[in-house]
Image (cartoon, rainbow, N blue to C red; front, side, top):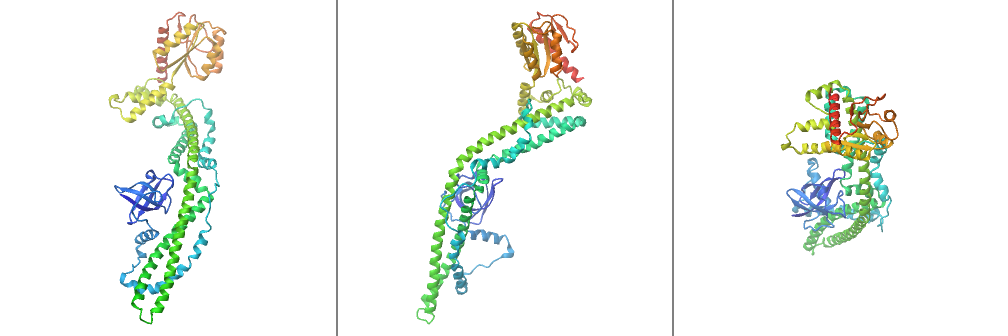
Length: 533
């Protein structure tokens, strides 16, 4: 069933509002059901909607809608307010008393009617057009101003090379943070506390950003239309016009009732001495009634004219605003996510770095049978292994997705340096094949290998006993100087006495790629055991 109503309340921040119908019913609505792209919801706007299951659906402005119900006047709203305030109870006019009170009220009605001339002066001259007083770019910029300030404030995070997808890892990251801190509170250093607090602050900004960008029409109304001086002036004038129009409708109805009574009195006093007096009163009141009807017609025409001006202005700039808004939304979202991902990476790295030195956490991992390097991937793997894979919940499926993601970025880096291109390719391929979590990279050029090692956390370094440009010891000297992570070293060929590193394995120069890969896996397994102990 289609109905007419009037917006009694609307909150642009959350999109919720209340419609009052001509039957005095209050119906809640949400912006999601707003179906009019030419007019935005505003206080006092008459609307057309489909009433179904006690809900207002497919809401449009009554100007653009097609309803059979009668519009809601300001008088209806006043009556509702009176009903909600018993102390202001008013007596209604009884039909039989109308005639008696008509004479007493006539002078007051005429006095009110004499003020009609002041209405046009109050409303001001009619505007012919609407001029933009705040351009689109500035409006969009203003909307995202706080977001941009917070992004610029954290620009230093853009220099962090590592990234962890915060939107994917956020729940498990905080679970890990809480669990590890419960085992050993001392791992939460001042640096980790600052990182965690700032990550929470930025995550809150991200959540607010998602809300701010969820309803572009509300943003258009909030930062563009509401900041247009001439648009607002015309809108305020239109609201005053409809308010005055509703007042005149009430007056017209009342004066019309009095005229009817006066006409009946005139008809019954044709042959009495009171006839001339009653006739003059009737003519005066009838003239006032005509003035009211005329003024109502003028105000109605002005209201429609102003509404058309407003609607055309809204239409003219809406699409361009949405385009700029969408570009800004994509831009700022990317920046926020990048910062969050950098913060998540730093917090995760610092947290596990401290966990590796904690005797309490080492003991806990040993007792729980958690094997592997101290990192989120190992901890998550332990949790997933404890779950029934045949009955995975949606949350666990997301954790499985997270584990695959972590496995793709937290690889075991293995560096191979040989003098033979063929050997390099075969060794690299075989090591990658034996375990998907291994990221092997082979070089025949020592300088290129050193640059790669600086950017990656190399766990195993495989060297031939003779290199192309440097002696092995010279290379290891530079390696120790520029690379912070200490690797496990495998030498292929003759034994090398190093002043900088211990040699873990000495293997034949002609070793098969498969056997080399198995030795690498064994060495990494021993490394995990060392960390757990």
